Image 1 (tube, rainbow, N blue to C red):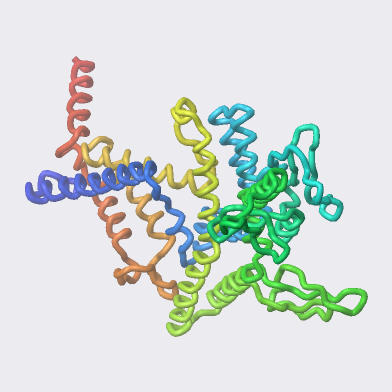
Image 2: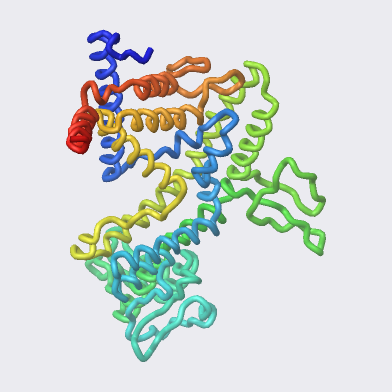
Length: 444
């Protein structure tokens, strides 16, 4: 076995070709993954690790940080995440005070909505709506606080304080006693009083501004104010009546006489499905039970996408709008580096490992060490979804038991590590030749 001279030339060529083929595949895979980082869909191992199965399932899923994406459905965690991103965005691009103020408006909406108005019409009385709208006579403007936006019903009532009506053509006219537009003898509408028209236009503008919610307010509307997502609970008050509130109680917990689910929220449905899957995974022994779990897992993933999709779109829109605030000089600073996470570190190590080991195997440099490290990497790809009895099969057309393509590649790399393929054809041969020359001169 130690007499390598007995290995045929054909075997040597095939072994070297095998090493170089694996090296090329590693290198191309690593470069492709790096190349996707500049695209809209950068590569990540998140999906692969999230779907891990077998005895190491929890370990690999924990590397994702939030494998079931429950954080996307938690308002407080998402709000905190956006605050952290905003701070890093401001620090990275060096936003000035005006840009920071506009970014805050994007995130939290305007603190005060303003519309210009020189004077109040005589018929306007703000007494009933003083908690919603105010008039700054010195500066000539109407004000509505951002935390108490003008409701459509309030806007209609405020517009009705002056005799102005909008015609079918969209123009404004003076209002007649019958509620329609007052007409001239020639049938044309009578123009409204200038002060009255200015009032109506100011209310129109404030209504539009009030409808422009900040991204955090939109997030709250999705995760705290949508009864279909959050659910509705009835709580028994001291008076013996039920008061509806947003939320859902876990269906598995004991019923509380003072609490009752009116509408079961989809977020809680998703959490219940996850609990059912985890419980079923522990007791699954037959193929039927595993098939049932596989079907349930597909439903869980569909539900996850359904619930988190709108929140992810909201975050994407927020970041896109934030980048529109930047100047050309600020954009030259490059993209905002992602926050360091265990998943990102794993992705970086995977891409770096594939690229470096691919180069070493391709050129035959330190080929034995590179082959061993490559085998270790392939085993790490093997363990998240091992084709073992009792483990749900990995998605895809492959059917395997104990040995799959990852394990075959790992065994091939260990075989390459056992032979001096780098000396046969590669830089290891040049290093060996050069080292021999140095040693020969030393002995001389």
